[in-house]
Image 1: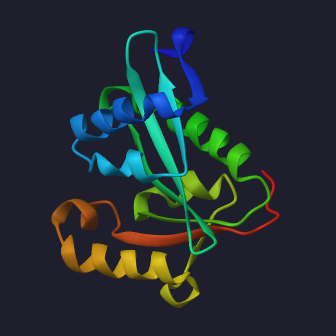
Image 2: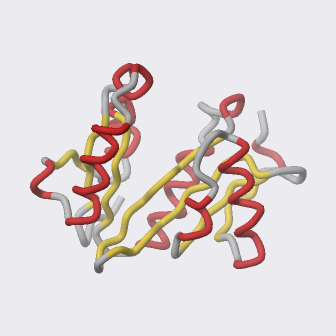
Length: 156
């Protein structure tokens, strides 16, 4: 349990290299954190334990690369990161590509599954690439990739 010393905050420019190293440590592309418009982190007093990136592409907000240390999952850290994302997003629409087994998690925050042709261009192209470049057992075991949107004006 980590709750006592956990803080969730918007990362500053000075945090970007640390977040990039965190993504890399957990097997993700380190560039994810560097290129985002907004980074939100979860940290205990000693280390980063979670992060999420928000990007704006072609006028659309995309939530990308939410990750929590595996040994700390199921403790509400992801939900707290997502809540902070919703504050940052405000009333704007927000899109994401997620695993099918996370539909309910994101659904509780107002996201709904959409078809490929409802997705904005950058998200559609990324989804096609994920499905073609990552046809692996991991994605399939997690319900494959799904597109979701939290429509503009949605409140929790």
